[in-house]
Every structure is written in structure tokens, then in C-alpha cells.
Length: 128
Image 1 (spheres, rainbow, N blue to C red):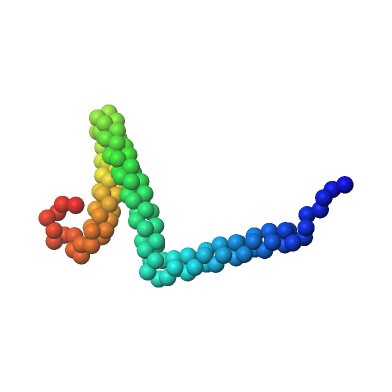
Image 2 (image 1 turned 90 degrees about the vertical axis):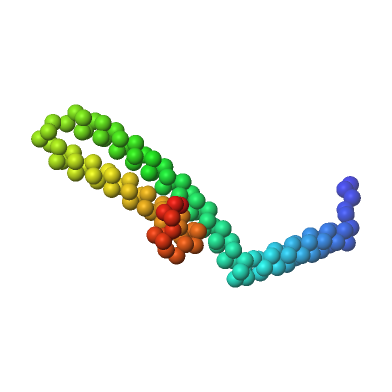
């Protein structure tokens, strides 16, 4: 014959669990309310923006380094081994690769000046 637990113990446990869950829920809602205020929200939004911009900056540097390597390989292969009749086509492609590198560097350069709060990036000493 099994012993049955008194119903009062089960009710007390059930009430304890419910009260604890309600207190945790109330605490969570209070934290959400604090974090959803404008200043806190903008702070977390700015942290996310900084993280994404750092990741994109590293990716841009990798792209710049790869394009410089690609330009060097192309110049060594194309200009040194190409016949003189196709020089204008090779020259056009070389200038296109140079332009890719310069545009990527300019984007990165403007990003660093915008992050530092400089209003006119040409008025400085020219250093990043």
C-alpha cells in the first residue's frame, strides 16, 4: 500500500514555484524596461554599430591587401611577358586594378576620419 502525500504539501510546492516564477518574470520585465529606455537603447545600438564597423574595416583591409597582391601578380605576368601590340589593353586593365586599390583606400581613409569626428579631412596634416 502506497503512502499518499498530503495535498497541502503539493499545494505549497505549487504556490512556491508560481510565486518564484512571477518574481523572476517581474524582475525580467523591470530589466527590459531599464534597457529599453532611449539612452540605454542608443548605447547598445552604438556598441553594435562599432562592432560591425570594426568587422567591416578588417574585411576592407583584407580586400585591399588581396587587390594589391593581385595587382602585383598581374603586372609581373602581364607587362613583362605581354607582346607590345596588346600593351594598351594590358595598360587599361592595370589602371583598373590601381583604381580598385585607390578607391578601397579612400573608403577606409574616410571611415577613419568620420569615426574620429573630423569635419574636414583635407584640412588636417594628411595623416590618419
